[in-house]
Image 1 (cartoon, each protein chain N blue to C red):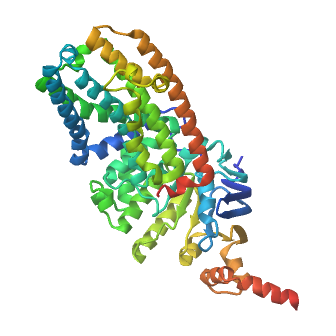
Image 2 (image 1 turned 90 degrees about the vertical axis):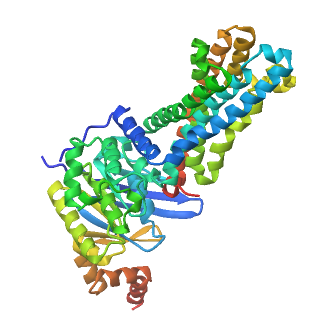
Length: 255
Length: 273
């Protein structure tokens, strides 16, 4: 019998910081094996949402579950089945790439760690970088190392925060290809936060748009383009960010 | 789809080993880090050692109490460097902005703390063993000659240093790097209160009550009893152990509460100033 439990399920998720409301009662459910983009401008609540999915931030109210585990209370049950990559979270700079991968591999309990490191080093073109200090790598090389770390445990749920930021177009394209292959082969669920709309169009089968802490739209890219009468997701993003959709809705309502 | 990794266990020696390995890689990659471990204890021991020599030659009481200053400085360093070793390993994660990666990994708070404890012992050994050898060479003071008493002194001092280290780490997790200076300074509050270089009876009565609430006070009193009166005071060591159990439990509870508070406030995301 197929497992129908969602990989990620958010129910009325609210997060209030002292500075104000960051996430305001959002709900969504991601089926296992799906790839979804979480989009929104600065301050939309994406980072807080992802942090709550990882259990780094506790919701003020509502519930977030990953692979059936309540992330506010029971996250250690599933953390070894997830992973995360962001160019904005550093890895220890003084450690070599090999040392970093070994430490994280042990933390995640990766079986045949040497073999897995070798495999990833070949796939992500890191073989020549393994014995170099991580801090001495270029931004693009660091992103590849960070990606290798995020794939070490062959995660069932992979959270990506702008995975191709600071990569040249060729490498970025190659990374996207690798992520697509990984997801298909592993059947992994991927949630991707990105400002690169071309990337989202290419990779994602569903787009969740956030603005000021709420979900303002949630659909597949084709239907979003049709609904907003646009040719690219970037234009849809701009419509939402600048409130054109609301203005257009109001005009339609008035007529 | 089944997970391709080991199932989670509540307390994993492998994850503790991973963290110890991470700090060991860091330590051996930087000779200034290694040198710093030995430098200050050596300077302090030499200064107090020569002061003791001078006092010994000019006061009959201190001539009988040979080694109390050097003994005190070495035991104080166990307390101070033990906490510093714990806290610096923790701060390395904050400086490296690696806390997010660790907190998202299967590493549990208890395993993290256990790794920090092991690293405090490793750093202490690197710093203190050469210094105790120097004390033998320069002043003929053999710390290891204290025998079982040294084990009791060490155990009590290291437990206090860990309790303070755990509490400071929780405060830094909750409040960010603005609280970093606590890691460097908090132990100096104990220097006058725990009567490292003088007996508790020197303090005013009201302050003696506070001093006896601190486990290291019992250790330093015990050391003086051993070196001056050649008596091992097991009653003092047991009292210190009892207090340490209370402080360790309180510090662990506070750390878990502060970690939970950090998750509520979102401070694990920032991990900066």
